[in-house]
Length: 248
Image (cartoon, rainbow, N blue to C red; front, side, top):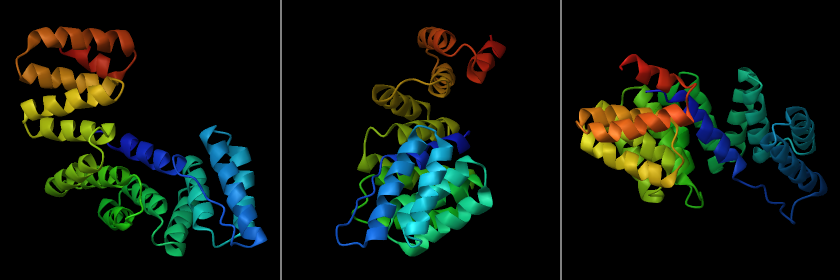
């Protein structure tokens, strides 16, 4: 199961959908830091990494104890493949604000992508333990992905169910559950999750190829032709399409 790319995706969305509020009760430097964090996140969204570095570095100088600044700067370093720096700032963010769900989710995803799946779980749990966390489906799905990498399927099932209870149309959880059901030979259940996924998100090469393989297991040949045509037309350069051609 190719989970690393998905784990990174959820990490980035977890940062970029959040916003940093400027607390009027804070001091001048802290307020300025919060503004620079907002600007830095904006530049991260635009992939203007040099400008993001300028603003986030300034934010950290203005307020070295800002968990939001450390979290955003960690993501920047992650993108720059500076793993040691990224880990330092992810960890520092979670130490400065143990209830910062975005930081906990992001540090957990970082640990997962670096082969520390079991260590990552406690940070995802911390993220969802905060009742004010508005998007727990991110952390639940990340936890499931990481535990699947560690072959802990029962726990992964549980986290995916919780993700879908929090947001029934959360596409990342639906696709991961579809993959899990397919790998367990529960093809009718996999079909249902894949159908739900395609109602909530744009089809991808990954989802179409999984649907093709699952449909073949269900002996529904007419559906395969339509799925294969979409894979060819929409993702002709994908590895998934090349894999399809191999079995023709």
